[in-house]
Length: 463
Ligand SMILES: Cc1ncc(COP(=O)(O)O)c(C=O)c1O
Image (tube, rainbow, N blue to C red; front, side, top):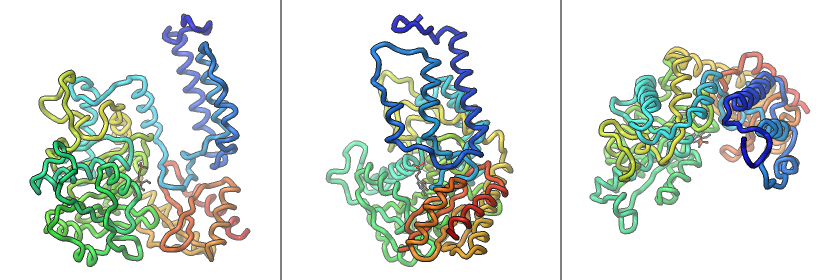
């Protein structure tokens, strides 16, 4: 019995089981209803604070009641991000098998930074590393770090790049830092994702030099050719522009950058998965020649959050940039320790849900998932045009960027759509115009969800 309260000790098996069953029941109820509830939350943060921010008592409370209260407090403030009609940002849903594996990951409570200390996870991680390098067609020997998300996957690839270009210039950045180091140029497409800039900030590399982009947001290779010099350089390219879904011309840009000894990183937070389908593989043609790649399994692959992936072709650079050793740790004598492949020391067992999702889908299942998302995006584009909206991008992948007359009208369509609650799409500004973005990224989205979302959009457009 917990001495601080009279409510039972949940380390007793029966109490613990009851608590976990309670949480599982609430989770199942939520998932059963998520496709029917309005997508936006019913209440805002300020309204919810009264329930959440009760004064913290001096004594603890019954854990079952804590879970009941958590559910009751959270319910009105949950945004149905896993709804099959959530098309905002680029979010992804979650396959039940990946969620189940994620629950087990929590229960197993492994700190997986050291390969030999947590062998079950190490084996799962190394299996996933092999499957994904094969599925995506990345070079043999590529190492994969499991990180929090796209930002940290970009950070990891760029950190390896910083290490490599400075080492070539005779500078040991891990030992000497950046003070007095040769200048590192970082070239990016004008429309790179903002997290590339943030990762560069963390790395002390400052603001990158933006190379002009074309009308789909792809880096202009002619402008890149003019910008490249023989100074130590990192080039960040993009597989999947957040507005247009467009892919940079890797086949042209990468050899050009390599002629100047530049390190080439690709941010493919959602778009890297195009490589997994024969129908979309052409979009990434030539991308395997890059040096590092970032993606997010929580987006296109539909595993729970906390599943960014950083791939680096040169494992030595990967480990040198991020590895750390301490006498009290039990380091691997062979393959890398996971803590050498990403920015964190302690880590959650992120490979378990990945392993489960990939086992469940198989290679064909991943390809079919990608194809289905592209199919839905095209249906959206056709539907928008049919009802008089504009589609501003070439719909090559999962993003549809729409406009509805002038900026004020597009903003009004967005407002009405969210007020209706059937679907969620996000507003933005692209190439000087207010737009309404539709991002398809949930495995559970069906033709009928797309139909319902289009109907809601038509009502919003016609006021
Ligand atoms: C192209 C691109 N890069 C990076 C990110 C950042 O990913 P995360 O939110 O997982 O850090 C996103 C997120 O939408 C993205 O679309």
